[in-house]
Image (cartoon, rainbow, N blue to C red; front, top):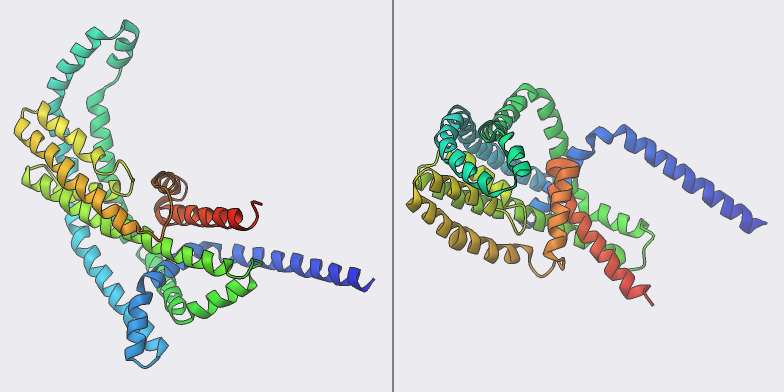
Length: 349
């Protein structure tokens, strides 16, 4: 009877804990994204925080404040410099894209007419219904206009952005200061065998850092290299296209090819075969080799995930969660692989 009462009390307690947890998460649900970003920033800044903590003789609060202040200062400077350049390039691209497409369209129409003669009549009739010029102009202007609207929306929602940023950096401060203690308590509370909690938490931290390396380091290198060759070749808005190269580099296996291959074809159609050949060689040997050499180095041996899993996790994360999916997608995939490895080790037999 006592055992039955103890079981009933435990069940009631667990149900109550779950209900209270759900209510609490619903209350703070709107703040989970900035808190998550605070956790990410804390993981990034933790090596610098620990070094400064040693120099300040284990004074946690001053060390955390100094690290966060320097990080914010760097982010604001980078955002102002690159944001202004990209904003100008986006406006320039919006103004010039229609004229550039009009230069290409007569030659593409001739090529299209030749292709239609080869294809069956049903397919050629379908192709004839497609207005390629309007679609290209619409897509290009949509991308550039979307970036302009994003910058303008940031300015328009300045108060909201400041409030969310304060929550993010407030979270970063306490994750830096108390993160190790909170992690220890979470591992102890987790109903997992001894050692598994620490393995999963360390895998989470490693994958967050790896994802951020892929986003910032790989994106910065590919963006600089891509924008540089576009600037050398005299292509309009090189800073904007550098951003596109940086974003495209987040897709393993494709990346830079989806930017420079269509551009090389357009240069060839416009009667610039030398520029097209230069771009193709640059894309294959400079952009391609930088991707092939840097990606394994940035991922490292500590993340034992197949590139295909990283690809679908990254693309799926972006499609489902937006920008934050760049981090959450690979992290969830890494935790899944770790849990499957633990299952194989402990329970498969």
